[in-house]
Image (cartoon, rainbow, N blue to C red; front, side):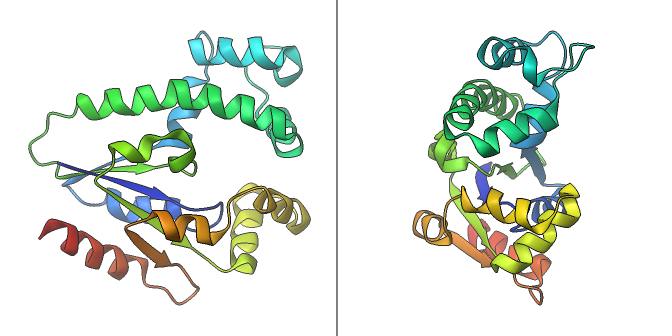
Length: 197
C-alpha cells in the first residue's frame, strides 16, 4: 500500500483530483479539511482546544463552531492562523495516521492524503510520493469565488497568504499543471501507472 500526498494552494483542483481518485476501488482518500471538520463537532477534544485558544468569539450560541468567524480571523491575523494550524496539525495528523493504520482491505493499493498544508504539518514524511497541483492565479480566484461564494478581492487576499507555486514544485515528486484544458483524469492515470511499476 502506497501513501500519496496531494497538495497545492486553494483553487488548484485538489478536491476534483481526489474525487477522480475516489472512483477507484484500489484507493482510499483521506481529506484533511473534511477530517478537521468532522473533528470540530460538539464534545471533541479538538473543538475544546479551539475554544481554549480563541474563546467564545468564534462560537455560535448553540456551542457549535462559527466557521465564518474563525475563517475571517485566521485569514486576517497571522498569529491566529499559526495557532489554529498548530492545533489542527496535532489532532488531524494523528487521526490521519490512525485511519491509515486501520485500513485492512487488501484491495487498497493507494491511500491519498489530500492536504493543503501537507508540508507544513509534516505529514509528507509519511508519504511515498507527493503530487502538487499548480494553476494560473486567475483560474484559482475564479474557482475559489465559485466554491466559497466570496468576491475576487477576498479570494485574492486568501491566496496571497499561501505559498507560491515554486514552494510546491521544489518539494514534490510529481506536478500537475491544472490549466483550463488539463485532462486531470489522464494526468493522474499516467502518475498512478508510473508509481505502480
